[in-house]
Length: 561
Image 1 (cartoon, rainbow, N blue to C red):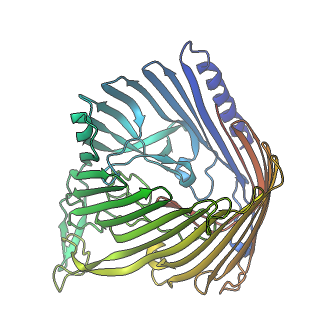
Image 2: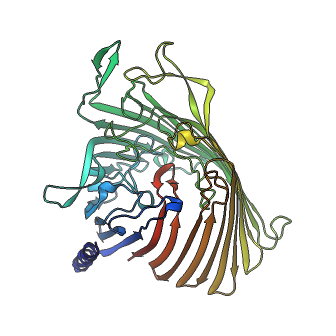
Image 3: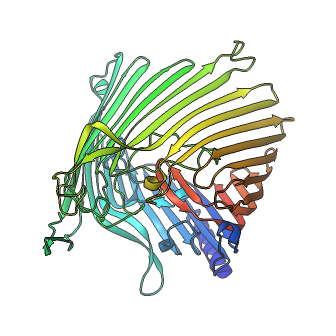
């Protein structure tokens, strides 16, 4: 294991030294190495691994010279940390591209990330925190014929994972064939006049090709073969409008019938609508969002599951919390059936006012509510979602089961030049059975309070304390948490924390203690820690991964250059 780590670091170092010899242009990049040891801990259901130590790592290097940019990413999973896709075990070049750009064209060959509109029909991106990477390997072309018209065209195959070939070397696996075109039109730029209203129009089309596979159903003791389409297309139209302090944006997407493992191989077309209304002026901001998703799973492989081979992205309108207990039950976007609303109001009370005080006060109020769609059978004797059928009808006058509800208030206040605090209150409903995929599990009702206080002794030394509690009678019950962090700017930080599950219904009341310290120098950060990791899920933008319980040492080394 240690030998593999050293090989990885040596190869990466040699590559950096080699590319640094290229004359002209500029070189920059970044790298990160995360390691974790695992040992048995029966109290929290954590188990050790045969390797004792596991490692996730990557390094990006970019070379730019005038109109040309070249990039490469080297990844190493030796072996993959628990909670990430174990198919990535190994190391090798996972991402590479060559880009040429001028005023009219932008050509990318190799691997690339792209998005049309809000991502309803296409969004490829990478996020190491959740182990997500659906890069496309192919060609991405952008063309700007005149100011105000922007064209995109893509074709390629989506990244799935690492795999080992017959010689034992790792290589990146790409699946499916994805093709798409998109156009954005800015009337304001076209007419080249300074007018009070701003408009943006967009239209997109994405198609995936997958050879027909065998899929069967049984009707009245007779086995019938399903006709699965080789090509599936999705279309979208969007509009953005702005006038003074108000802006409005909406996007509608339609997908032809796409029988898949996600929807139980039904032949209902897909529909998606995502809208935002914002109002912003000095000291006040209001955001109102709505979303409607009906049978809109879109993958490069119809049999894929979890986070594999998603062509599109379902925007998450719920709040992404940073405090651990407020984020304990995050919303998981539902690509088959969801409808919801969210509103967020932010208000800044000015300095030297009654509520603003000497330094001002920031207030944020957020509410989101997500429902399942209300489905009705296509016929009385055909169950909803029956394989090989149209699936169901939607009654838009009614709402399905409540999936998620989050009401929270946050206050940010600077009291003096030395002391500031953040206060958060959250009231939460979480449909555990649906959102965690565990039928029969009771719903969770929880109230969470967090108080984050920072005292700055001088320009170098500061102390931050964090107190949290989650009160619930369901799932794992109630929790309390305390954290203390001491920072010596600009280099050192030290932290201790403990999460105590003091009223677990299963009597498994455990302390999740953690300690860590780190050193920062310019853009390099090194951190070493030890402690317990709580089982759960982590979500970013509605895309999630499982986090298993663990006990052991961990370290992080990251840098940009």
